[in-house]
Length: 192
Length: 377
Image (tube, rainbow over all chains, first blue to last red; front, side, top):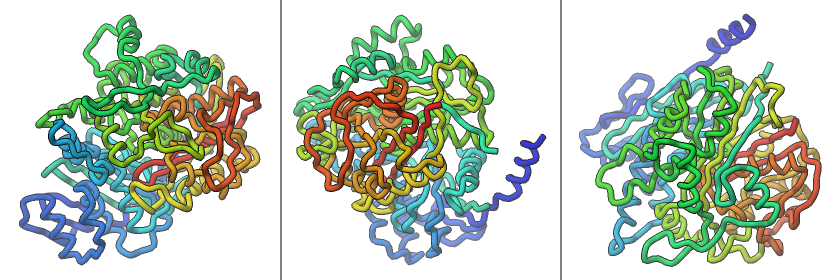
């Protein structure tokens, strides 16, 4: 009984303060559309969004597409606020397979063997978490999970545990899925 | 009240053996799994720690009827089987899999993604074989994955989501990974020498490891290690280079030790990351000194197993618990003369020691770091 009561209290105190969805060449923040482009590829859409939203962060252009997606979504929520106590917990289905596939093409044949460190470094899904951490100077708790589908309850439970432990005050949480032209980001900020 | 979580069983599959006892015996003898291997056709050979495929098949066949598994999946299955036979899987049992690249070898010369390269499919295949009832969770956080997977099990059990968890970690030596680290010029030209003056890079390794973690240990367990604290803080500095200040590792250790409520003097042994790259080892030395841990006996297992990526953190945690159980500290293989700017107490020969508190750390690409404190109960 006591445990049940505690659980109920816990559920009440978690708050989702901001959220961002990116899909079909469109960015929606807290339910309001903030940017839409007619571009047909993710690459062009990301470039248009970067220009239009005046992000001014040249490192963006070196990122792989998964990092660009996660970065754009995080940017919409984190803005220029202080996030020195904001943890990052992201997940997706395709891990870094978008870049893995490109990297593999660069080593498939003997005659066309050009492994590039700049590509190889993005063959890990948590690199996008690193990119967001660098952008917002977040020396904070972070984790990346691979799940077969978006599981908000799992991510929220995990975020809640970080908040209850006192290791962070907020958690930027969510789903950043991308493989070639199929992508969706749903990222949100949680606090106690 | 915080629920306590304990590691009460484990197993591993490595070039040094297909169970913990054979691994331990080989480590005490100073044996290494690292040797020269031809991994990429028409390319030079690399030093790597690789499981003999014939031996793996010999071990696999009598244990499993169905041969339809990849090499990595066979490693996972062999590592997990003895644990599943001893501990019941219920509706409240989590299944957590740590890996960086999973079945990435399947991608070679493909024009479309094979289903097996999805990490969630890999996890589901293993889960289905043993009859897990909850959805698998994959932790893929570069080289800290194995340490983080232990922390994830602890945190999800404490969140009340599960009662117990099987955590497995594995990665395989592949052309994909070897070519990538080689393009970074990060691969050593000889067996790796963590923290040594003459270190010149990593050896890649492969292994699978498995642990059973529970909030309700029974009286029949052979041993019990409490997962007392954990943390994984990002450097926020560079995606491929270690921080020069050791900020993220320092903060991870500090936060894990705070949660565990232990001081630096109380730590009996550090199982460090020690990849044998110039910058990683230096970064660790700085972080350990900032935490005043420079006098605590420390080793890196990379000289025995190479860097097993997503498996390394779990495998090395298991070996550190074996150290505590036997009361023997294992030397940091291939270390001769210090090559880091700050003092460290690097273990040079087998020595007896009473070990209660273990600090296990790891660091990786993406600026990630992880630390856990394990307490022998």
